[in-house]
Length: 145
Image 1: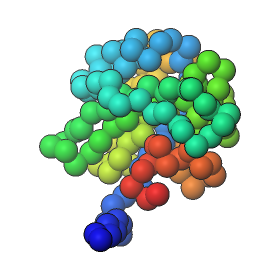
Image 2 (image 1 turned 135 degrees about the horizontal axis):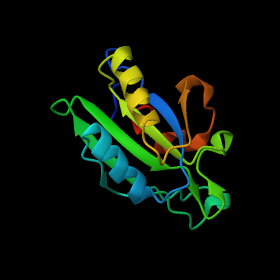
Image 3 (image 1 turned 45 degrees about the vertical axis):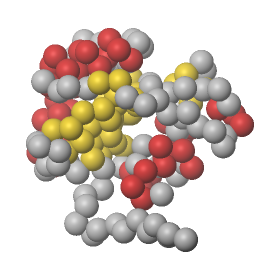
């Protein structure tokens, strides 16, 4: 029997969570972000929570891209689907952008400023990851769960 252990390095930076309020379909938002920031966000495997009765049948889209030769990774996840919410504490947030292995704090500031310039986006919130106490956080940051 083979047992797999996931080791977490202390060198891995905590991801940055950016809440986005935008009442547009996910494909329009991802396209606008790609154009503004030069990203390559592409639709990947959707999030389908199977162990939450409240979210039974809900599918949350997930767009992803890698930057800086694979070091930094961006996910754009829909937080709402048919009046159901993936991260309940963030029920007023339509999308959550997760920046894995952020290059620097100044890059995150630059990213937020550029996102604010997108007309489809109504509001942007920087969300401290340790303020989110939700079992579905594992879908946004699977490396620690």
